[in-house]
Length: 260
Image 1: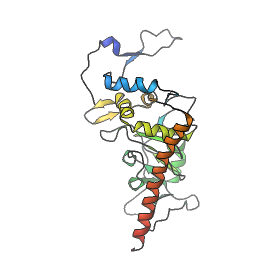
Image 2 (image 1 turned 180 degrees about the vertical axis):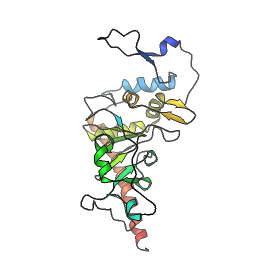
Image 3 (image 1 turned 135 degrees about the vertical axis):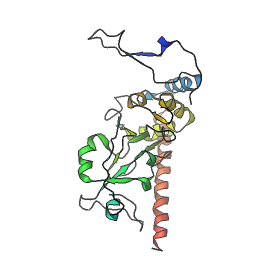
Image 4 (image 1 turned 120 degrees about the vertical axis):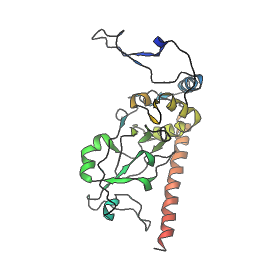
């Protein structure tokens, strides 16, 4: 939430040093962030904690933070088969198979990313051919941290992809792939806290509902570390909660299936 603050215009510049071209003093952008104590203190507090790390720390990531892309949806309301995708929970409580590699693939939109879990009921599907074409950029893997990056009301929501079946995300979702998936679950837990949300909100750009947070700004967010045992414990609590959520939905679907 924006608050009134007074700072000199020159203080809002971020230098983009390029020593090779000598443009250090001429090449800059305006800081896309709020400078009120509420947001600054969140950063300083997290950064000052033991074993703190930034989401964009390349030593911890498999690849740089990126966004998905707009899917070419394969589902058609007039073709019920096209609505299914590999891993989809069916009306009888079972999961849709891969149909020998021919089944459609799950496509997650920003509204699928809830506060800590993923709502696959809202997912759509893309073809295998489209998945193959975009998987290097847009596919997600088990253990990926997903952050909604656009839209008033949805921006800043986080979840970890905990499924084994393939999926892609649209261009409104950022993908963070840690070498150690425990960091995904731990980071998601922090980003759902008040302090974590203040850090996310600090870097929001735009207005009038057309807001977004860019991957390079997500990379600046600090996650307060701790002893490895404590970090693992926090991560496992969120992972366990998501497993229970999935199990609950599977069992309630199975119960309804008795009356089909």
